[in-house]
Image (cartoon, rainbow, N blue to C red; front, side, top):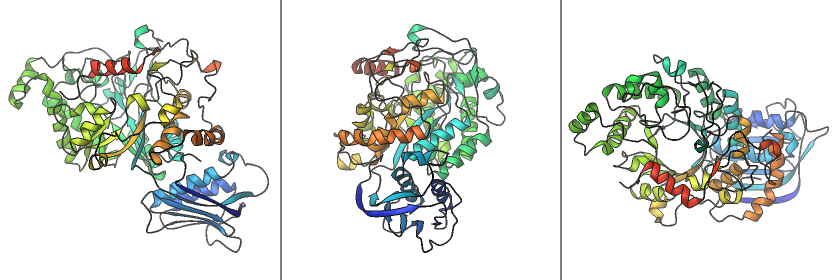
Amino acid sequence: MIPRPAVLVPGAGGFTLRPGTPVTADPGLEHLAAPVRDLLRAGAGSGGAGSGGGIRLRVVAGLAPEGYVLDVGATGIDIRGGSPAGVHHGVQTLRQLLPAETLRRAPAGPGPLPVPAVHIEDAPRFGWRGVLLDVARHFMPVADVLRFIDLAAFHKLNVLHLHLTDDQGWRVEVPGRPRLTTIGAWRPRTMLGSRIHDRYDDRPHGGYYSTGDLREIVAYAAERHVTVVPEIDMPGHMQAAIAAYPELGNGFTGGVRTSWGISPHVLNVSDEALDFCREVLDHVVAIFPGELIGIGGDECPSGEWDTPEARARIATAGLGGPHELQAWFTARIAEHLAGHGRRIYGWDEILAGGAPAGATIAAWRGAEPAILAARAGHDVVACPDTSVYLDYRQSDDPGEPTPVGTLLTLSDVYAFEPVPPELSEAEAARIIGAQANVWTEHLESARRVDYQAFPRLCAFAETVWGPPDRDHADFAARLGPHLARLDALGVNYRPLSGPRPWDGRPDAPGHPRDLADRLAEVYEMTGDLRR
């Protein structure tokens, strides 16, 4: 099983599932009974367990909120959770106890399904076990997003960070701002491979989510105990919005960005631009109920903030220069979200100049930002690009599709430790979890997302669920049977043996980097986080 349960004690005998096996669920757990009934391949009735035994789902006191206990014996299957989320995790473990074929939509075969007797006790190490999905660089239809949520929940991940806007595309319908979707959601062509090759496909790309689409994604995730954290990146990574509404920029009148990399075209710091951001966020908070709202804050060049308007803002706000404008801007956005009872979730660049109180930091530029943020009293989600950026290449095999970034093998991801050893016990408590990031500059389809994410996301899921002391050999032994589950779920994972001939993208060449070069490049692009 992946993630590996904390306690697993095999027993003698077991329980046999039949189409008529009854499933009983405590009030509030009815939605979790449905996937259990799916395992039976027929409409197993609700009601009492009956003389033949049955499956029971219940919430009990004394367990961690996301903890669960699963018992399989001659009289039935009992899943107890500290909350509905804990019961959900127990159900995922039950699904993995059965043959992989039971995960398919077709019946696994004639006859009953034996379940071996076992006692399992389990609970996660971290409360934030997340994955970022970038739908801005390449748009993913709603059905693909829902499928990705299913796969995340199957591995007991509980946060989907949805990167909704960027220079290359705006993916959120906003009432009163039609050009965000008629202009900002589309680009005339797309760069192929690393930007050093300057290749393009000359094919339009775009798409956006209606309010109804986003509500569906949020509701679907909530049923699977996944919180969706939206990100509207600001004040940088806004070229798509500025293309739609040029008055938000600093004189730029071009279109949606078609190349990768960091755009120099950022929001201006006028009241009009701030009101635009507030208007967008007012719409976002009406859709996404979580306390944290992503505001990005990464990779924001200040070169365009040398206008009379920017200098006037610097003077009236008492700032020391353009380099202090982003912190001022972020503070205004944090104040607005606080009025909605929300807090900001931002990339570690917002530490420069002092992040607002209550901000949660996504620490992506190595381990140092996590240390600085924790010591500054911020909650931290560890997501260093050198460990958990799943768009990075998986091997040195020349057949890897669009190999970019530093080398991140399956074992590298499994070895990732979210808590830097330099932190004291009190400081370490500020590391609320970690997330793996799936950036899609080079991932044009759900099939490509599958290839980059799996099975490395399986390794990451175990890293954030279980204890810091992990056994890679044990994980590798369990991964083989788990790949059969991914096969049954239709996942186009990367084979352990390496890329297949049809996985390659010779039309989209990459740019492999080593670790030292990548870190130097990151800080050259984004600046010193301690400035």
